[in-house]
Amino acid sequence: MDAALSLHYSCRYTVKQNAYSKSFPMQVGVRQGCALAPTIYSLFTVLFYRELAKCTSQAWAEKCLTIFPDDKHLHWQIESTGDLQFVCHCVQQTFRLLRQYGMTVNSDKSRLVVALRT
Image (cartoon, rainbow, N blue to C red; front, side):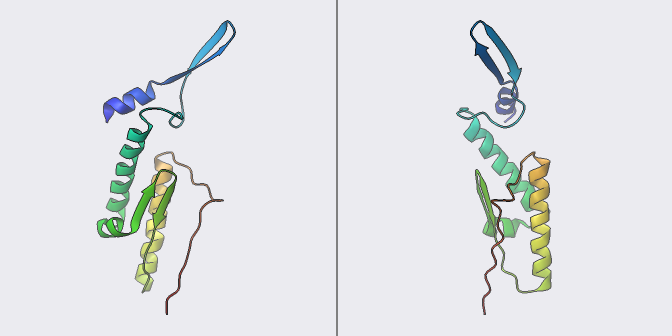
């Protein structure tokens, strides 16, 4: 993991215009087409999953958490006020971890879906 991250952090962009060129470090994200991108994302996914399971519930994470590269799906079955408090806790921890790891959430694409069963 350290080798992959070291290689990622040492990446530089070079812009050339005729006889001029300038190199600068990549400061945010993973460049498109980077051969390490799938590995870096896999490492991030494992880290995110483990940290979220630690601060919420391992059993819930195993059963109710699905992670895609550009999407996170979390679900719960709410039968009590305690369950609703757990939902709030999980959502707060999810956003906290995403911010902690420098990820941004697009609020225009974020949805909360509620299904009522009688």
